Image (cartoon, rainbow, N blue to C red; front, side, top):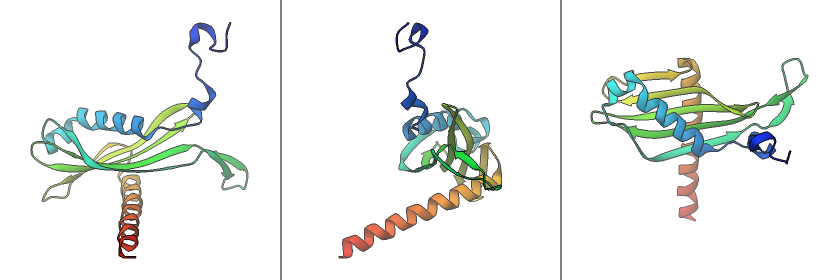
Length: 152
C-alpha cells in the first residue's frame, strides 16, 4: 500500500489544516439558490454580484473558559452580494473546518427591499447579526484605510 492509502482515498494532511474561502462561497451560494424562502423573496434566478469579502482565522490552540488548552478550528466569515429578478440581497456566512470537514454554522440573507427582511438559511438570528456587523466593520475600516492612503 502506497502513501495514498488503500485506493488512494486518504486525504493529504494539508487538506485538513487549510480552509478555502472559494469552496465556502460556492457551497453557500448553492444553499441560498436552493432555499425556497430566499428564492421567494429575491426571485429566480439568484446570481452572485461583484462584492465578496472574507476573514479567515483559527487553526491554533487557545485557552478555554477553564484555562485548559482548546483547539480553535479554522473558520471563514464571509459576506457577498446576490440578486434575483425582484430584489438584491447580502449573504452572510460562517463556516468552520472540524476534523477535516467543512461545517457551515451560519448562512443568512439580508433582503434589500423596503421591509429590510432577513432570511436565516442555516443557524440562528443572533449569530447572523453578530457576524454580519463584525464583517461590515472590517469592510468599513478597509475602505477608510484605502481613502486615507490615496490622500497621502
